[in-house]
Amino acid sequence: MKLRIDKMISNVGLGSRKQIKQDAKQGQIKINDVIEKDSSRIIDTDIDVVKYKGETVKYVQFIYLMMNKPAGVVSATEDNHDKTVIDLLSEEDKFYEPFPVGRLDKDTEGLLLITNDGQLTHDLLSPKKHVDKTYYAEVEEEVTEQDIKAFAEGVILTNENYKTLSAKLEIIEAGYPSRCYVTIKEGKFHQVKRMFNAVNNEVIYLKRLSMGPISLDENLKLGEYRHLTEEELKLLIG
Image 1 (cartoon, rainbow, N blue to C red):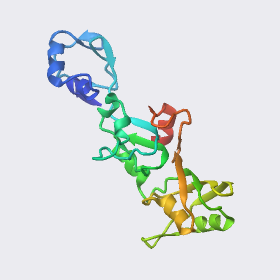
Image 2 (tube, helix red, strand yellow; image 1 turned 30 degrees about the vertical axis):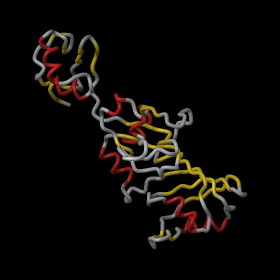
Image 3 (cartoon, one colour; image 1 turned 60 degrees about the horizontal axis):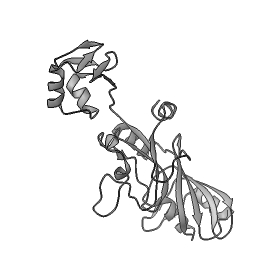
């Protein structure tokens, strides 16, 4: 990408353009190991090596984060009453103004992707894409083979008269409560909970395990997050 030196450096949060301009005049910027005193010079981020105050600057346009969302935190960029997932980020990552990819209910835990890449967000959330999302659920009543069949055929969501797309329900352990996996291809409001409501059951614990090709890193404790790896990014955006 071609852009001004001061824009590149300021965009990664290393200083204001005014400060960068002053630092450039003092010889604090090097392009390919040559001092550059004109902070407005256009450089190519794919070719040129930029050093600011002796440190190499890597231009970052998008960030991609994986969070193990805890219960009690809302999937939003801001909220007047509750802590948001953005509040859990470092100031360095907040700088890029990321937002959650879709929503997890306040009381739902697990995988939440956070990015500032609008196109990726659209692709993951578009109803036409049918991106798989898998959850671990604990429900009050015993899950049956009849429930598995109902999920596969699609159920009518209460108060909406909407029939869901085919979903996969796998029983891990039947009983009271029952433990199971649910994979859906869409993201209606409170969908997993409402699907169980449709078969006269109640979700008491819900955790998202995967979204598309990305699975939750079980090494992440609740409330922790990390940047996606290169391998995960390749799976996600090619």
